[in-house]
Image 1 (cartoon, rainbow, N blue to C red):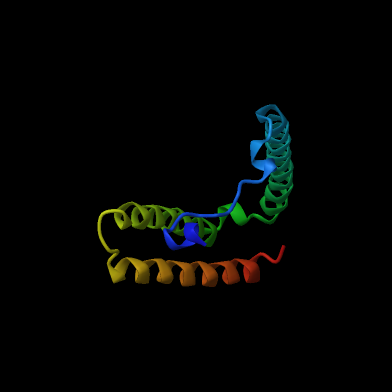
Image 2: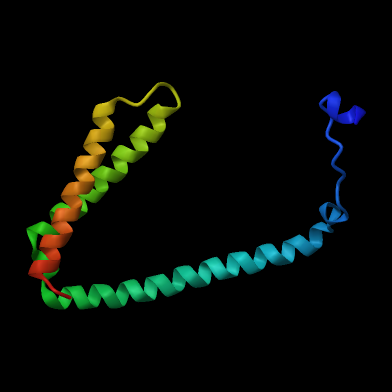
Length: 118
């Protein structure tokens, strides 16, 4: 127990840590292909969904555009919070603004579902 008392780890490396880098490269390609396949599938589903929503006329609704604008504002606010978090504590009013935008988005989503039941 001498190693433990001096703060030195006595855990030994397993043989799996010494894997051949070429074997790992094959797995990376598989993950990249799966990711791009998932992106392709999501894009196809998004096109179908956009066609469904266009048929209802939701693109002309001011509620739809306000909700999209609020999503963009929320994204910008969250990115700003993440940026200033590195330098100083985040002011409480920014967190409250983000919470208010999320609540407004939930109400807008419910209103859009009520007006355009798709």
